[in-house]
Image (cartoon, rainbow, N blue to C red; front, top):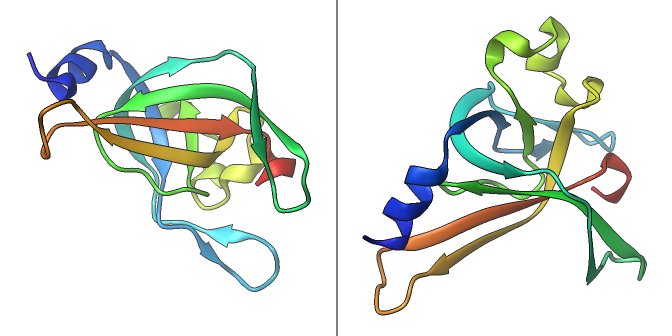
Length: 128
């Protein structure tokens, strides 16, 4: 079984994803319409030795394993489109349980250049 097949088999939860973040010129992002994606959401706080541009340590609130590439500065919500407030479709920041993707990793599995392991690190809005 390939690593991508294994990850796909463990992605039994649904997340809503806002991709293609574009700065609106006022310090906020605009996004494509939200879509549902399969995932495995690990909701645990992790203090990783990653630093932002000001030298502050970043605290990740969760790691999400996915089957597709995601954009850094995109957003994720554990749930379905039906669970969203209507305003969150265009402005995901208004919902408490929507988190920005601070870091995205796409790692090739051993002995393969086409099979990948993907995970998104989520943080709080102040670290975006």
